[in-house]
Image 1 (cartoon, rainbow over the protein chains, first blue to last red):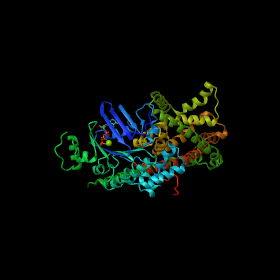
Image 2 (tube, each protein chain N blue to C red):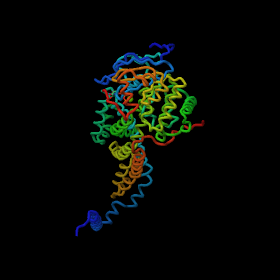
Image 3 (tube, each protein chain N blue to C red):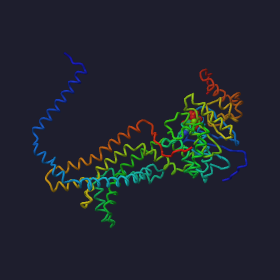
Length: 259
Length: 274
Ligand SMILES: Nc1ncnc2c1ncn2[C@@H]1O[C@H](COP(=O)(O)OP(=O)(O)OP(=O)(O)O)[C@@H](O)[C@H]1O
Ligand SMILES: [Mg+2]
């Protein structure tokens, strides 16, 4: 297990393969994310975006290839995956707040049980991060009492409370009513401005354009096209990227589909 | 003159009420009221049972049931986790246990425990341990399946969230899965408690000293001294004192956790002074 903190790389994925039974979902993915960069992953449904993201904290076990996050090789069979995961925040499409705990305890439980922080410190960190997402007034609310947008912001604050080096977002706004999307994207934008390294699977092209340092377009288990947002979204080179973007950006006037 | 559908339904219902009244009247005439009063409602015998029926019998029933339930719950949780284990022999063992103890009458288990074990192993348990084991061993078999279902009903996303925060498998189980599972299964678990309360009547087979009597044994004992069913009626009412509130509790919990929401708006007691 090599720890190589000096390199500017936060995430290094090499030759990543993942199959579910006979279904090959990822067929050889290479991704490098520099420290402080925001990388957005776009692509059609079923192209393996979530699977890729979930491999980055080993929620899915890769079938092949190598994943290094902050100098720790996660694909090393002897890695302490629980310790590694505390440095990698994950935000899910469906929020997944602990439904039996109130907001404060959602933010404190892993700090206490995993990082072994004392109650005072854990609470301080929790309240600071709750303020960061603009929900200081919800400390004692139960998840079920919050709107989707509020739940997702709490989920972001929960991940941030572990002081992660990298944040993974899997379609964080896809389950939200349109009027609530802006709040969550606002929090993510602010996080990006503060220099957080982020991998974001999203269908929010406007967000990708404005915030992403780089955009990856995935299709059929490969990264088909990759580059600065202006290039991949603004002037896609690959035919599959073009047809995907045509469908996403102007869904009512779909051109003749190629696939 | 044809009746409408509603009128026909009404007429049918009225005829049912009429039948019930007729049956009640006939029974009232046929029954020997003096005899019934003597056998069921003998207040002298009932009065004689107090206060022991409460201080000894009801109390012991509660203690035995609580002991059996506590042990059964712990064992049931272990069995449920074994049943969900990736280790196949654990699953087999749990399945065999559950199928066996659900399949044989509880009375047989109690007999085996109270007579067989001391013979076979030379072990002599005290009364509380024996009762705890007997009721718990049987109760665990039923509770295990309930707990397993509860654990499986915890959404997968909850587990993934916990793991992504760095919680180990065991920590996730303790902190997230089991608390949520128990919220889901509180109503059926309360029903298991009712069944166990009634099953505690079977431990008379173990052989109890006078101050160890639970309700049924106490009732039978009183019965053998006084030729009236009054004692049985009295202890029956005592069981209802326990089981009726539990039944209401179970239905209340079911209503509260009903629907898909598991979360409840209760405070976890961690106040914030910020
Ligand atoms: N646990 C699993 N078991 C079997 N197949 C799976 C599993 N998870 C994902 N898949 C399959 O892998 C493929 C890629 O899924 P994935 O969720 O990564 O796609 P996605 O790009 O995130 O799609 P979407 O935009 O709809 O979220 C799909 O065909 C999916 O059915
Ligand atoms: Mg997905």
